[in-house]
Each structure stands twice: as C-alpha cells, then as structure tokens.
Image 1 (cartoon, rainbow, N blue to C red):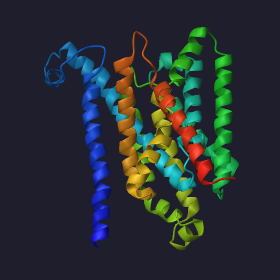
Image 2 (image 1 turned 90 degrees about the vertical axis):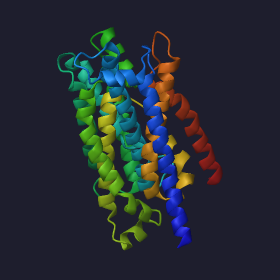
Image 3 (image 1 turned 120 degrees about the vertical axis):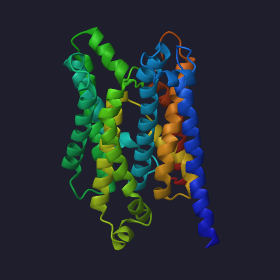
Image 4 (image 1 turned 120 degrees about the horizontal axis):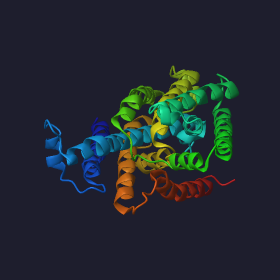
Length: 338
C-alpha cells in the first residue's frame, strides 16, 4: 500500500515539475524577441480600445508562436512515446511511419503550385491532407494485420517515397524563389504564424492526443508481449490503428504549420523514461509536457541568439537530436550485441 502510494506521488511529481517549467518558459517566450516590450503592460494593453504597438506585437506574433511551441512540442513528445510503446522500439519516433514526410510533401505541393499565395490556410490544409494520405499508404502496404516489423518497413517506404517526391518538386520548381521558399519551410520554424494556424490545427491535435492517451493501458499490456496483451483483452489491430491515427492527426497538423522539426519525439521519451519506471502509460503525459518544454526552450534560444537572419528551429533540434540518436544506437548495440 505504501509502495503504491509512493509511486503515485513520484508519478505526479514529474508532471508537476514539467508543467511549472512549461509555464515559466511560456512567459519567457512571450517576453523574448527583436522588440523589447514589458510583458505585463503589453498584456494590460490588450484590453484597451486602441491597443498599443507592444500589445499588437504580443497578440499577433508572440502569443501564436508560444501556443504553437507548446502544442507542437507536446504533440511530438506524446506521439514519440506512444510509438515507442507500440513498436517496442526505443528508436521509434513520429517520422518512422511516414507522417512527417507526407505532411511535408502536402505543404510542398501547395508551395509548388502557388496556392499559399492565394489562400493563406492552403499550407496547413495541404499538410494535414498529406498526413492522412500517409495512413492510407501505410495500411495499403502493410495490410490491416501487419506485424511490428512490417509496419516499420512500410513507414520507411512511405517516408522515402515522400522524400523523393519532395526532392522532385525542388528539382522542378518553377523559379529559384519557389525553391527557396520550399527549403525555408522544410527547415522548420514557429516564426510568422498566426492564431488562424492555431485554430485550424488545434482541433486535430486534440483528437490525436485523446487517441494516444487512451491507448495507455494497452501499451502497458504490450510490454508483456502481444500474446499477453491479447489475453488481457486488447486487440493489437485496434491498438495499432488508434496510435497510428492519433499520430497522423496530431503530428500531421503540427508539421503542416511548422515544417520539419526532428528528434523531439525521439529525445524526450528517452530522457524521461527512467523517471516514470519504464511504464508507457505514465510516460505519455510526461513526454507531452517534456516536448513542450524542449520546443519552447529551443525556440527561445533561436530568438535570443539569432542575428539578422533567424536560425531555423528544425536546424537547432536536429543539431541536438542527431548526436543523441547516434548515442542511442551505440548504447543499444552495446546492450544487445549481434
């Protein structure tokens, strides 16, 4: 009894610490930028009939950027933890099943045909449709009764095909400016996003979050093996569909407005897993909060250290995540020698 109580308390401590860090970083994110503004007077000015310039900067630029930093980071962290639990693979992350690549391809197609210039919301809509296409391709290749290895290989195939089509679009871009626009977007950023982007993508993210969080008990059961999970009343097919659909909706919506932001879904679950007793269900919430903390931190560093040309957020996360990924591969090989 005391042991269970101690585990419950320790399980609450990490989310509380991460929540406090997220709130502190969100306030810092609202304060950091090229324009030096006092946060509290700018917040008060939002309620004035004629808003001062500082309040307009806060409402139109920094609030959407901060909200997207929280929601996109939470999406990537949560999806990474859920996929690692589903595939029982410590190297799994949202890009593994092709969602990120196809969402990026959908946005690139919008750029290629110039739709983003005529319809502001064409970009996120294209990305979301691309993510939904990933699900159809994944199950067309793997089938409904796919095993874990088949699912991973199908995801790699979908990602490779989407990457090839993206490269083709760059190769055939009608002008250097169009190619530059595509490349800039693929590097990933939270800059120059509006609340319209937030309201368009947030409902899909929330649906994805609900699906992923609801899979927690099944993911715990899968740690005992597929046969044990079936004995406990869980259908592997339903769990796969639930996690993949949740990942596609949430990550597809996130990538559609931010571009490519790599390694958050890989790094965060690994950093937090030892703190939750290696239980997938307890890792989900902590990974969501940890993803938000990591992405807010990276975006604040981008703004604080950039010069005339702002460093892209996806570049920063890749610089941090790629060495960590190599370390994970080395550690996995050392623990499981061939």
